[in-house]
Length: 435
Image 1 (tube, one colour):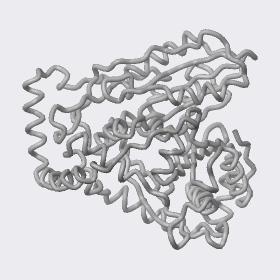
Image 2 (spheres, one colour):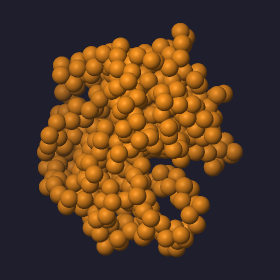
Image 3 (tube, helix red, strand yellow):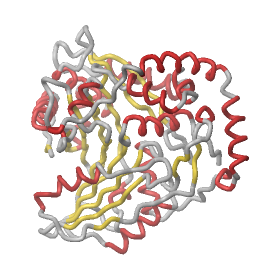
Image 4 (cartoon, one colour):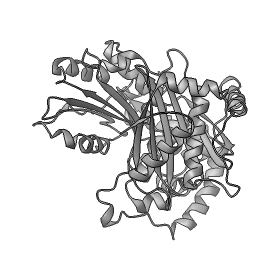
């Protein structure tokens, strides 16, 4: 297998380091009984030999791009020593989402389990987004349940230092024009860096958590609501996200909700970590909820077709960013991370039922969501223009929607977010259970 990261994965890995926290994906399984520890131990071992069985190693010459390695450090299965009060389970879940990950070298993922004092239990899997996007993460879980292993090998793991260095020189030289443009960009960033300061978390932010709400809706109800308005499950998700954005004032100067939607470009037997493109568009909800989703559905379909079938070139800045010295890359990332108008909607679709069975038995519930560890304070979030990220998936006859959001002054805590989410879902005739 090719050992050099693609530019998108390389930018992802370096971006985590630059922003001071990993962008991760977390799955949480809840059970009405204790977990089968023997089966969970087998699942943990299977994850090590699957898609998550690799880490990133920094290139000696940054412009060459970092490389993959199967020589990874893995965290052990983490088992809480004593049962916790059932009322503290949500706190435990949040703590697992804050667990330290190391995309470079590892451990790049962690599996943990806890028992509650009422006989219930929960399992958390947290993984760096660099080593797996949403679909790859789900595939890794389903494949581990099935005991499917991969022969993860990279020739560079056997290279000596001089051979690695010569390979870095060769691959850096291939960048050609990107290197020349990086020199000019580096000069600009070096000047701006003089006045650049990284936001520090306030003392009052020590226990801050990015406002997050999980809403569960019967899948039949969700699909019926979408069809009644001439839309699809994805179109309805976009409309809901745009409505939340409009309600909290996360819009452009014209009052339009600016949307970004990740698009999977993953094919069968695709081993890429992040096989993603994205589409962007505006949604106008200034007159209220959309009664007709057909125009929005057509727009999304057109954008998706262009991105998937004709291919979508990487943003011009990405190869230039890879060629930057690491310290200046950090300056660039902090500058482009700020945007007070963009919202993201991601739909994983219907997940494999095997994902519920990590200990051989179906869990009572499963949650999936993005955890951005760098958004750890009101100070940082405000500096970056706030945040709104909505994701959803379908499992066991239910649609689970997760919203992460912070946009002062209308959205600063989970209670406000829950109120907005419930209000927007009700506008589309959806009845949700919120957590």
